[in-house]
Amino acid sequence: MLLDYLGKHYATLKRRLTRKLGSAEDAGDALQDTWLRLKGGEDYGPIQNPGAYLSRMAVNIAVDVQRRHSRLLSGAEVDELLEEMVDPAPDPAQAAETRSELDALFRLLDRMPERRRAIALLVHAEGMTQKETAQRLGVSLRTVEYELKRLHERLEAHLAAEKN
Image (tube, rainbow, N blue to C red; front, top):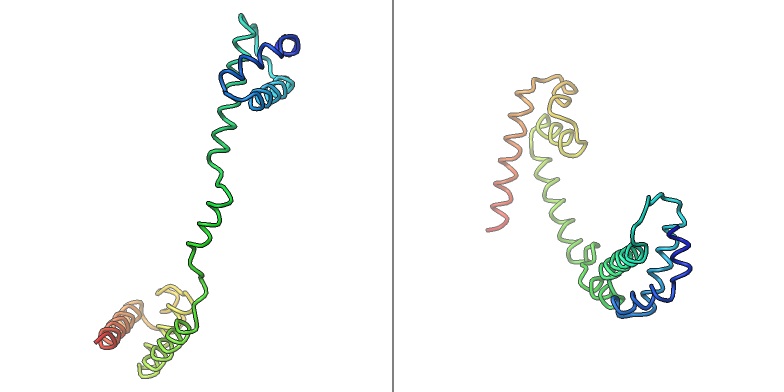
């Protein structure tokens, strides 16, 4: 019933939609999308005023399309966003500084007792839990917690001394 009405009154519906939407092209697109939706076979039940119903349906479809288009960025906006993005790769100076910091960290680890160094590497480098580390090294969980506390204190002291 609605498809038949749309076919018979297409020109009138398009004029009405063109006035509401301000564009004959948008009105035609909205009516085409309305036809496609109706062709989908959904049962709309009895409609008292098919003209008003189809107009409202087409306007809603057009509004949805306009909202989707307004959310899309223009080419200039995309270019602007890309220019603002920071290159995630470090520059040579940053890479050298990071290598220097890592070397200092490894020298600090080398000066620590063997068990503390092993705990630090298992927990922080290999991602083991403290419980797994304790089992692997055959020590108590309390020992692992103590050694990690001492490690972190030593690292904090080293970092504070580097800042000064």
